[in-house]
Image: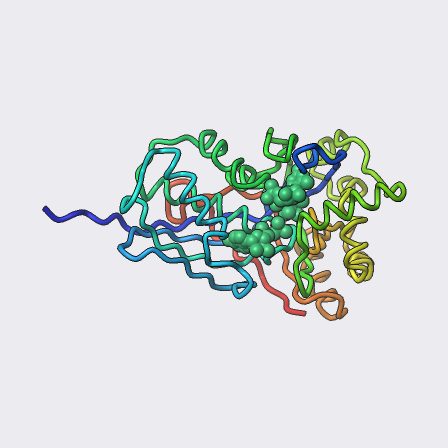
Length: 322
Ligand SMILES: C[C@@](CO)(OP(=O)(O)O)[C@H](O)COP(=O)(O)OP(=O)(O)OC[C@H]1O[C@@H](n2ccc(N)nc2=O)[C@H](O)[C@@H]1O
Ligand SMILES: Nc1ncnc2c1ncn2[C@@H]1O[C@H](COP(=O)(O)OP(=O)(O)O)[C@@H](O)[C@H]1O
């Protein structure tokens, strides 16, 4: 009898920024407890998974050359973790994966985590698994602290390592400009730099996240702009002093406020509306402070099969190159 080969599945998955990131002291396991508010943005990666006789991984797009294609790639780790979880083995797990990256590598926008989440969703469809998103989130948390958020998207409060999530009401759409830096920054290195800065002195700490939750519910970008904050920003700036100039340039270009996203080095600038975001992007692109500029909006949904019933509308953002 002929085996029926299922058609490939493509999943679109958002990047994230941290509107608020409060980092506690280092734990014994090397992680830091944190309180963060994530927002998923329309800057996306696309991941296609296909059943094959010859497993492989192709990477195209933003930063493709610096993405590992070995077993270190988070997409491969997702294949392995899901297969183990559902008890599949050997030939059953042979997949070909194509990553089309829009999210910069090691940019503080959780691109690798996004690809892992997309792979879990894509394989669930390809393998016709009856598995809930909450069950996938349990597997996702073993792959990285930011992976569960990429499954759900939207706006969420993250605690623990960032993997424990509750949704946060966010009214209206917020418009962002993202400034990509020349090179990425390593997340563990930035957390290590924060520990060093805290051992030597008293870098600024963000306050409570409650006002941020209120600003999101109000939908007023001016209110939210006053409250963006990230404990890792001092560490990212310490490792990459040029980010100070980038942050200043975004505000000078007309953004309401700017922040380093996560461990950086991407800077996210909140703008009044879509039109203002395009103006800020154009001016920032000419300021010579970053490699590339993108506009994006949020919140958007988490990893979704493209063309599936719950697929989001295509959200390719206009692109402005520095
Ligand atoms: C900083 C943040 C903010 O959202 O995002 P990025 O800037 O990387 O996108 C996250 O905390 C990054 O999460 P993620 O990139 O998934 O990190 P993981 O793979 O879980 O951990 C990588 C390393 O980061 C450090 N780490 C991560 C999370 C955490 N709560 N405390 C930590 O100290 C640890 O050194 C860990 O070994
Ligand atoms: N699919 C992937 N895409 C990008 N980077 C990946 C991927 N899989 C593994 N990595 C590794 O993860 C590191 C962090 O990448 P990324 O998730 O993009 O950044 P960040 O943690 O700053 O959000 C990269 O330097 C790369 O070596």
